[in-house]
Length: 454
Ligand SMILES: *[C@@H]1O[C@H](CO)[C@@H](O)[C@H](O)[C@H]1NC(C)=O
Ligand SMILES: *[C@@H]1O[C@H](CO)[C@@H](O)[C@H](O)[C@H]1NC(C)=O
Ligand SMILES: *[C@@H]1O[C@H](CO)[C@@H](O)[C@H](O)[C@H]1NC(C)=O
Ligand SMILES: *[C@@H]1O[C@H](CO)[C@@H](O)[C@H](O)[C@H]1NC(C)=O
Ligand SMILES: *[C@@H]1O[C@H](CO)[C@@H](O)[C@H](O)[C@H]1NC(C)=O
Ligand SMILES: *[C@@H]1O[C@H](CO)[C@@H](O)[C@H](O)[C@H]1NC(C)=O
Ligand SMILES: *[C@@H]1O[C@H](CO)[C@@H](O)[C@H](O)[C@H]1NC(C)=O
Ligand SMILES: *[C@@H]1O[C@H](CO)[C@@H](O)[C@H](O)[C@H]1NC(C)=O
Ligand SMILES: *[C@@H]1O[C@H](CO)[C@@H](O)[C@H](O)[C@H]1NC(C)=O
Ligand SMILES: *[C@@H]1O[C@H](CO)[C@@H](O)[C@H](O)[C@H]1NC(C)=O
Ligand SMILES: *[C@@H]1O[C@H](CO)[C@@H](O)[C@H](O)[C@H]1NC(C)=O
Ligand SMILES: CC(=O)N[C@H]1CO[C@H](CO)[C@@H](O)[C@@H]1O
View 1: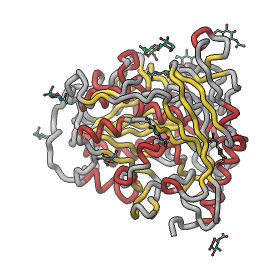
View 2: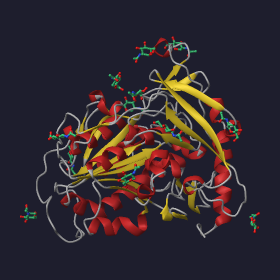
View 3: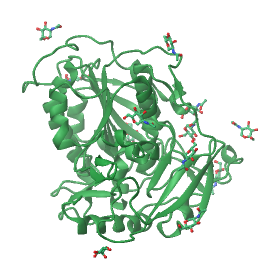
View 4: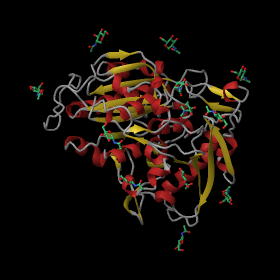
């Protein structure tokens, strides 16, 4: 049996497919999300030569066709598929002939990766760990005393921006350098290259540590990718939407068909509670990893006795504890920890109104980071990606990872110092804000409104 409670899991899949169409704030046909939080409209000269068709194709009930639109003058096609069996770890859960609509997104002209790019590795950090929080505008986050406290432990980027709305395309952007025109949260598989191709080529290891995730047994092996849309227990107090606490769309790797089609890669998506602590303290955290907090820890949903308007606190409390536990040890191993938010959303739950310039908080901790500092330079998710690529000397994906305007983490991190080569034992219960060198960890915080939707 793949799930502890197959009935709930199956119902969750169906509820998601239906709920995405009804609950999500979808863009009108005439709009395409743009970096900075605004939207292009059909009469904008900047997109006059493009074709797009976003919304009707992505309504859950309208998958029975073939659609295409264009991003950056490059046609992106979306093929529909209705699987009668279980693709990529989607399990039938005993519901024979269950149909799973999903969308395969391909670039019209596939981008070629470039290995061994012109830049030499900057080697500012040995490892990078990303943590992504959900759905808060910068001001809202930084009005929380918990995030103010966290800022004293690291470097706060005050001019950092999400790429798109709603949440899903932002997760794609940080590992692949584009959002591929996606403006909804249906069941996408992106048939494109990503940083995982560059990491494989370089021989660097990676992992995703995901709260509540359980791999599934398939004919490929016992630890295949689980593409269930929601997993985990429900929080009955979390009204009104009773959100499950795991979402597929929060794990960047699972969004890519080029990732989940490879069983060896699927084995690198791990249940956090079984692997993260032991991997950190045994010095086996790979060079590039994500820690994916659940929908309570990532601030998407409030804790049980908290109102929606107080949501930032739930994520801030969780991250404070997380850093108490791990930051000393991660720093000793040369890890940069990146905590960021997927997109800027207001307490009202709206992704787009008012236009908040997609302004999000991003905080850096650990290796090469001076605590209680800020940086005001313009930064986007593409800078998080670019920084990892430049640090490890991976080459290029040929997308926005080559665009220096979007920032570069490795410029914000001091050279490796201190106990980066330490073989010390697991961290003591001491303060983490000691300035020791630590691996980089990125954390995304996502949109609140999207939480209500999906
Ligand atoms: C569409 O965008 C153009 C250019 O920014 C702007 O002048 C126009 O007012 C917009 N139209 C609508 C309906 O928003
Ligand atoms: C967009 O496509 C047209 C037609 O192929 C081409 O002439 C133009 O150079 C392209 N623009 C960019 C920015 O690639
Ligand atoms: C699925 O099919 C199997 C065998 O064909 C049958 O035993 C089982 O009851 C079916 N399950 C459902 C939920 O219909
Ligand atoms: C994915 O894209 C590649 C081109 O990059 C194409 O050859 C392949 O057929 C696509 N896969 C699917 C399943 O469409
Ligand atoms: C990669 O870069 C190294 C050092 O700059 C160089 O020696 C090597 O030939 C390059 N490899 C490729 C495949 O370009
Ligand atoms: C957000 O912060 C900026 C800069 O301090 C301020 O100008 C703006 O009014 C704030 N917005 C809200 C909604 O608090
Ligand atoms: C599958 O993933 C492994 C890394 O886990 C990589 O070494 C291998 O090249 C990948 N295979 C393909 C066909 O991409
Ligand atoms: C952080 O810096 C501010 C000034 O930039 C200072 O007032 C405050 O005491 C510092 N806090 C800590 C914990 O170092
Ligand atoms: C860069 O990002 C912008 C905005 O997110 C996007 O429209 C564009 O297609 C991207 N460019 C490339 C080369 O991926
Ligand atoms: C680089 O990114 C910035 C900000 O997203 C954008 O305005 C600019 O057009 C991009 N430059 C190129 C060459 O893609
Ligand atoms: C590591 O840090 C400890 C405590 O600060 C210090 O005593 C020790 O000399 C450092 N070791 C190295 C190799 O820097
Ligand atoms: C263009 C295309 O592939 N359309 C397909 C969408 O899905 C339905 C159901 O499987 C097919 O019948 C269409 O051919």
